Structures are given as C-alpha cells and as structure tokens.
Image (tube, rainbow, N blue to C red; front, side, top):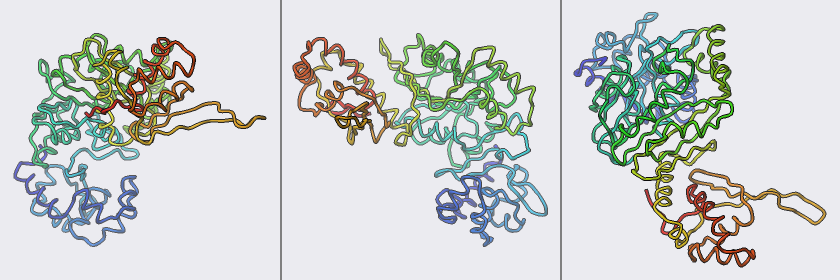
Length: 489
C-alpha cells in the first residue's frame, strides 16, 4: 500500500471531515462547475473554491490539479502528517507549495487512488495505472449486479471494478500483471475499509484451477502486432488474441451458472464477418453468449487514438509498422464492445453477436440481465410451448412509418417498431409481422393468433407458423413482444 494502515485511517478521517466525497464536491461546486470539471475545465471550480477551508483546498489540489500553500494543505489533511503524505507520493513540492502526486478521486461513495492522468507533452510510463475512465465506467454500468458468493476482477488496475463487486459479492479477488497497479488497488481497498484478495500475474495465471460466480475484466485489449509498451493497454498478444484467450477460459473460470463480462476489441478481417469471429472464440465452451458491438474504428484512427492515449510522441515509423501489420493481416476495421458469457449448462447454448449502437436505458447491466432472462425463457420451450403461450407488446412500443406522397395519396414505404425504453431497438417490419404484433394483447394463445392470420391472408396455417416462429423468437429476445406472465431476472 502507499500508506501504512494507521495513516490510511488518518487520511480517511481527513477526507470525511472535509466532506471530500462525490456528493460533497458536487454540492460545493454546483451542477455547472461539476459538469465542467468532469470535462477538465476547472475555471468555475477554481472560482468557487477560494475560501481556503479544507474542502476547497482538497478540490483545488486533487481535482483541479493546482499547487496550494503548504499550511492550507496541512490543515486539509489533518490528522494525516504531511511527511507521511509526501513519503507516500500523495503530494509533491512545487513552486513553494504542494500539488497532487497521485490522483485521489471521490467516486460514488468511495475514493479511488491511481496515477495522475496524461498531460500534454508528458508521455505515460510503461507501468502507468489508470484511474476512473470511460472504459471502467462502461464496464461497471454493464455488469449484472446480483448477490453472489465469489467474484474476480481480472486486470484490476486501481480497483474500480473490485469496488463495485464488493457491493454484491461475499468475496472479491483482484489480479493484475503490474505490482504497481496492485499497490494502488490495495490502497484503494484499505482507504474504503474493504478487504480483497490481491494476486499478481499475467491474465489467468494467478487463478489457475480456480472458479468464480462472476468474473469481470477490462483487459489490455488493444489490437496490434503484439508489441507491449504500456501494461494497462498492451497484452503482448498479437491481434485480438487476449480476448480470445479469455473467452476460451470461460468454462474453467466460471462456476456452474457463473457469468463472465469483459470489454473487448476484435478485428474485422476481409471476407470474414466479425460475428463469426467472436462466436468462434466460444466454440465448444458451452457458454450462452451475448456479444454487442458498440463502436467500430478504421485502422488509421485506431492507431492515432492509442498513440495519443499514452501521450506518446509522434513516431511515424512505429505508426507505419502498426498499420502495415493491419494491412498484412487483412484488418479493415476494429470493433469495440461488451461480451457477456454465462455457464448455463444448456445442451444447445445461445450465441448471439450483434451491433448495439443506440443509447440504451441505463444501467446496461439491467438490460443484460433481462436479455438473458428472455433468452432462457425461449430456450426452455418447445415449438408447441411457444404456440400455447400468450404475448403482449412491450410498454410504450411505437410504430413509425416512412411514406411517399403520390397521385393517390400517401404510400407507405417502410414501417418500423421502436422501443422507447430498455434496449431501444428499432426493427423494420412487413405488414404480416405488424399484424402479429398488433394482435399480441395477451388474450389469445399464439396458435389462435396464427390461425386468424392464416385465414385473413388466405395462407396455410402450417406455412405461416413455420415462417413466424423464428420471428417471434427474435421479437421476444429483443423485448418487443413479452410472454405473459413476463419472466423476471
């Protein structure tokens, strides 16, 4: 840890007494200045914190990143002795005052310690430890939060995911390749009064022959030739191999009924569907899988992004090598998304890979749980069971139309069903599917609905049933049609 246990207790006392919490900071700054500070615009925050009281000083030092006079910092951190704070690297002398040496961030009901974020012109060291960022908050929001016995945060960094796991897991294990990251994670845990099992090692090595109820990971997923310059982003595996490795380990890593959730990058290779590639990672594992692609980047933008991420100096030669590797391996784009795999024990597990670019109703973790619940309901039923069930439309389901004005008035070109809540899917449909959905009022079994549709369209009932059962599966999976009674996670 960065501080001795007694000094961590003193630091916690100081932060609590000053009100240096997420709510305390937001109250002191107000909504506008808080929002600006989240975008690293600290002008309003600095104007609002000139009193010199402990909270103002802590905001200026650890959020705004400015240097404050030593007497003010000493008062703000009391009863933690200033020499102990400096020895631990929390503070650094600069220009006759003190500035932050690490990132100490109020996060929800916790505090998180990590290295200071990247600064223009200052390249991050190889063992840099990231703080709370976009990827970590994406994963935490997407994690299914049910009460569990054991949880693993694989590649914990400063411990963000482990903090969240502590709210619903009896025991938390966190691993990382970087000893420096584990030191930050240990400090984060102790400062928040938590106890985690912390293990050092590469990927799965520290937990070989162990299994868990829930595994989450924000792995070093950056895709490239396998060059490792920064431990937080580079795995040393070529291509998207680190994500394939994690996927293949799911059967041994998870207890029966357990869940693996991780952020991933994958390559889009010429003449190959990305869905087939990601599904192939789980071939033979017996996992139920839902992989959702949230973004896609072309190789040039991807290389620029990650070189800039570590504030690396422009290196045309290295960028060229990276891009050449993509070209040599037929990589046309790189996808980013979330993969959830569950050890369901089904003989015929569901593996679904699809684009989910729209904004969903938060938190995404609830939407993931609902998706698996609907999928379980479908997989547990035969065709006769599905025909005997009654269905209703999702609350608020909307019908939208594109139409063109002609000589005889408006002619409908396309029709769409739109979910205003949940996963917020938009589905283009034809008149037959619209009739199926419109008749789903939970009053008739599906079999009787299809009989009426067959009569109305002068079509054989058996043919209509064969054509519409896969459609029903899709609409229920997406939450557009719901069986009655609705299954709950």
